[in-house]
Length: 118
Image (tube, rainbow, N blue to C red; front, side):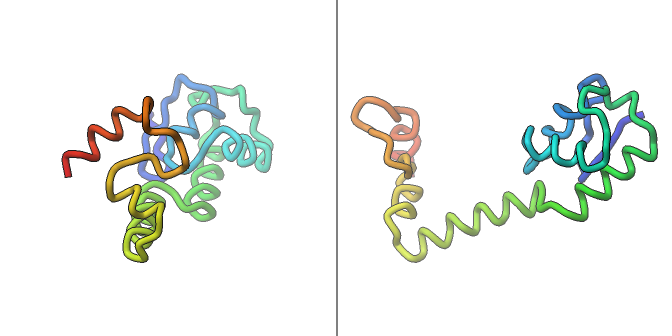
């Protein structure tokens, strides 16, 4: 039986803490918070969870957090906004260069290479 939460198939052989991180928008700390809130041991495998526990997790995650497509859309909209207002960070995104102050003289060859294609 495949466990699906937020349109993502969760691996059954993994521990619950790790399996929840397969959902875009949930990291280790958030996964631990969710499991602690519902008093589920984070070391239990997903296949050992009961149907009721899975349903509780599914409802908590889908109703509380911004995940997957919506989160990716928000991220793209933020980058688009930076480009439209012609901020420094927006121009770096447009050119395909690092936007957080990293040096580009010796490092960042990959991003410089992809930036030239545009």
